[in-house]
Length: 167
Image (cartoon, rainbow, N blue to C red; front, side, top):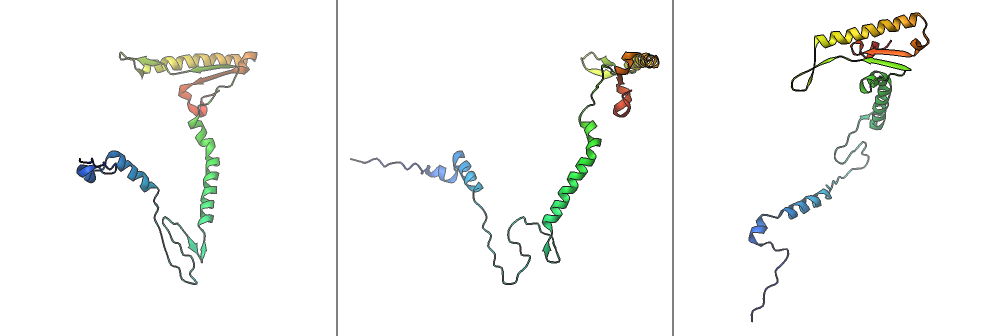
């Protein structure tokens, strides 16, 4: 009576030996992530400013490593520049808010194309400018008569831009 040979689960056969399966390739990749390089150096007596390893950045001036001080100076400079430039960058990142009792914003009037998209037109710009001029004139007249509501009115128009845009 013949005994059946127990198949070896690790044996993938002749074809599998030359071409590992997808799972075997992934496991090999994962094992490679945890392997580290071994770096060995022999440093003699009296050696100074010796760096052994990979990706080491050092600045030595007069036998002193100034790298931490240089990195701290760069970091502080970036923070100071960030704080000083924030007032210039902030209006570009966040739109201005109308914070008055009665806010009027006159936007540009667009042209609706046949495909449903919007386009800018000279006629729409003229309408928008005319609406803004009428409202702005009425606001100026109310402000001249010291009307109580006039102090709480804020009128903006797209053409005035971020810097001027408010009155």
